[in-house]
Length: 377
Image 1: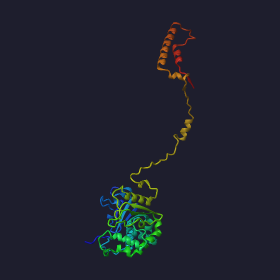
Image 2: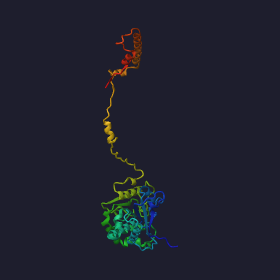
Image 3: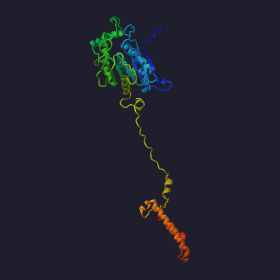
Image 4: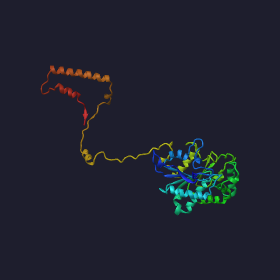
């Protein structure tokens, strides 16, 4: 059986291949591990087995495709002769092949330890040859460094870094792989990688995560803040309550590491104005003001003209005394009974003493006249 390939760019999550919600990817998140790292284990929490890039990030940024670059970064028994530059060139060609469908799709790099130097070398190559690799450089929207020696500038600092790595293992230094030996032997070349990148670093937002806990067996953090930070204007330093090995892992969605990663990714892509579609699930939805429809006439012009020619006669009841409407019910009933008695009296008088015809008024007219409402036009 042929040995498994160690140098490869794998797609860990592709929104376009999901059965439930097929979403075209709008951004590529590229993971690059470091020394003694692994394209999966470097980003996976050892207890919860959560790989934040595939288990958590798609719920907050569902259109993100996740790729992880793997290479032989073993400190011992390493037969790889590829160094920082060789790995950077391989990653460059792999990215171009994976992005052939959309070369201008935004890219975000997330690198741990010496993986950050590979990313720096890649972007330096891209900026130096824009005709061939310009799309990679222009599509990059931000970089997240985890424990990357961003400010190691001399041999003494590289030797200190190497000694702290040595202390993690009970092995002889003579067995160290060429990639680790380069920390001291090729210190000038590695420092040159940092310096070349510093000249172009103002093109992207940079987030430098640095450990705040001592590494097991080393008695101190492998990288302190002075080495892990670049100290440039477009850089944000973020401390992590973990050692060098665990600083790139998140146990769950509320883990501070993941919360900061999600925030940095959104800031790289959208700046301070994040669209509602990419907001966290817990964020409250803002009310959207819907403009009122334009006013339009209730009647057509011809109908309105006809209506203006219509004349109405309005009758309005005006009692002589406003208090008359508010009298108690007993008073009203008494008046009704009095009126009924008056009607009987008038009827009797009309029957016994008939008036002349010319002056006679019928009882019906008298009653009608008495109860006729008073109206004004």
